[in-house]
Length: 150
Image (cartoon, rainbow, N blue to C red; front, side):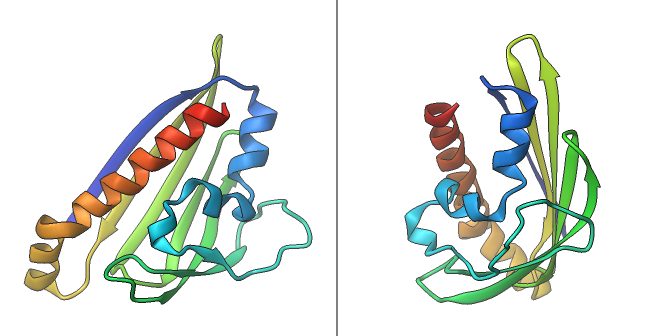
């Protein structure tokens, strides 16, 4: 079963600052809780995001089990939006749409994540027992860090 997570947050910065921060994979570990042991493996000489870009990570989503995760940037609309799509990792489906909308207070950032767990019925049980809560924890942590930063 497909699930959707939606969040939005007002950032008190200009669009250039928001875009530069969020389109850099190197900043992901800063906004990910430490208990996820999130490590960006891909060494990017140029932080410019582009369609087709592959980014490899290590992540420990549950019980300290380390997993490889690979996402591909499948869409970029400069300083407006981008989409990362899981190529390899813990989900059956993971597509994260990042949107940035300039306004009088800075930038409204919207995150829409469409995701599905593997293992059918067992995946749904895992979702209701702990995966949904874990994702909420990650995005709540992210919100807090971004409030402090921006």
